[in-house]
Image 1 (spheres, one colour):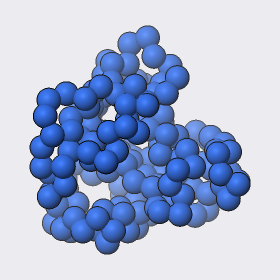
Image 2: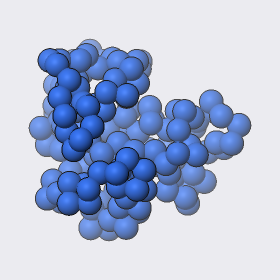
Image 3: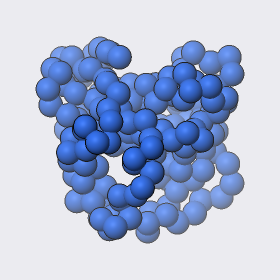
Image 4: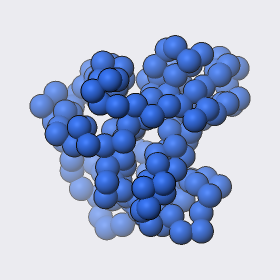
Length: 159
């Protein structure tokens, strides 16, 4: 899966590819460690879980080399651990990762996907068609909101 991102002059070419936990663990961990553990202060014991072994993972790479983002989707359609390193935020990489994850969920025969969005990112997911459900709640010390996207009849988030 390749996608071009042109919303920022510093972003020349983005490639997205499926990743495996076993084969790409170091790259996935590097992004998540930087964003969730170092930047957001999430305890390391909360970041890593057994779900990583069974999820479908995605890596975003600039110039097919530098890892700048990641995300995962599990067999139930739960999207999580979507992260883009700070210098590349706001360039469309997060949207590209989400489209790829939704595509993987659709290919797996799922009718919907869901996620727990950090409250500060609810608007991002709403722009992709996700609908908030229920009240805000605390997850790892950060306010979150449950969100859902029905896949029937959609080409992908943001389409």
